[in-house]
Length: 229
Image (cartoon, rainbow, N blue to C red; front, side):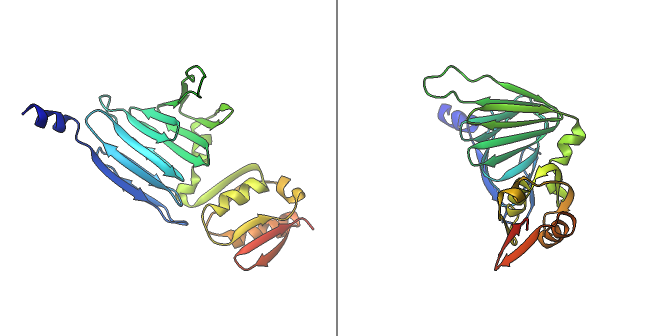
């Protein structure tokens, strides 16, 4: 009887979800939460009586975590954890880097200490915050909730650029499949752009670059090389 009780208390409801390149997917979790998976995203979910654990294996996901103070909602990505009680936020993996965007509530960003180092400080992120965690530390930008929402316009099919280097914009487009953008030279890479563009319309984006910035596009099969001359 005691053994049965231990198993009941520690039972785990596990599931995994994934989205293909170029697709978005919204899934309902068993605790009442929802997760919107961006292109090429994979998560593993484990729900128990003590916690709600999500392992972000790849990509980016926006979470609407149902409030449950008795079971923290934890998103793991290697040595970093995002911990909430109930709020709205996104977590994105870029190699070893992690980006967290908060649109509602308060989020805790925790990091495992490096070998031989003291415990890493906890970062508290209120709504409107964007945190970028890299090997060198955590950089936090605080803005309005509207600013944070603009960083998540991929959910509606758009990418938002604000004085963004073209090299970074190309990386964003390449996350969603289709023709792959390659920067031909350093002048193009440093070109700054702004506006909202559908991530499914790479060809339209390239035409805007040609018409508005004098960029020359060279098609090589599934690759589009961008040149400044």
